[in-house]
Amino acid sequence: MAHLWTQDAEGWSARRLDGAHLELAFDSMRHAGDAQQTATGAKAAQLVRTGAGGAQVWALIAPPDSDLRMNGRAPLAGLRALADRDEIRCGGEVRYFSTETLASVESFPGAERPVYCGRCRQPIEAGSPAVRCPGCGIWYNESAELACWTYGERCAFCDQSTALDASFSWTPEEG
Image 1 (cartoon, helix red, strand yellow):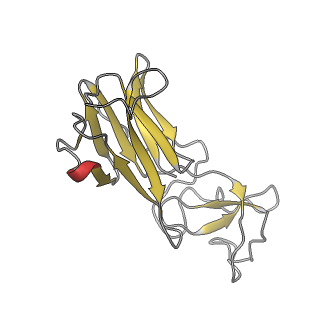
Image 2: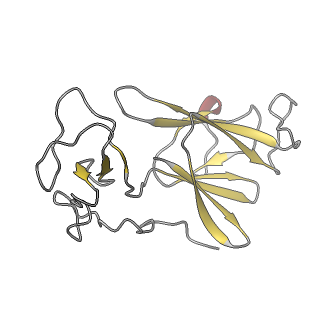
Image 3: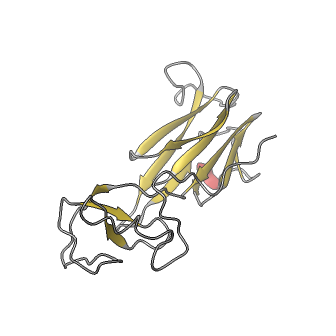
């Protein structure tokens, strides 16, 4: 799940992007018209999720004539696909887009074909508690009876930590 890093007086924090659309307001955004104004009067850009076949792609849509920059450049024709660690800047305000995800126990959604646990090799039943490795995407059982994800310190297929309370490996640099 993608997220957006924002900074306040407390430091950097990550906001999970779990919807299909996010209005991205910058108090300092310059814009010729009023159509892109938010309810508070700040100008807004849009983050929009799209994708097919399970792949998620996020795009930034900037208002015409805005001073918004992504990695130092204006979005071509006001549109730009986002990639991990992209910097979104407007005036003195900076945000970062990231695709890094954290491991969490969730209800296994099921699949057309059986999916087998990466550790115990037993089938994972739809609706049962499971963890999808953020590094490689392999599913693991994770219940009181089958704690396969947290059994070892690392994923059986990649170097991802199996700590359920892990923090992000990348955060924006302060300053």
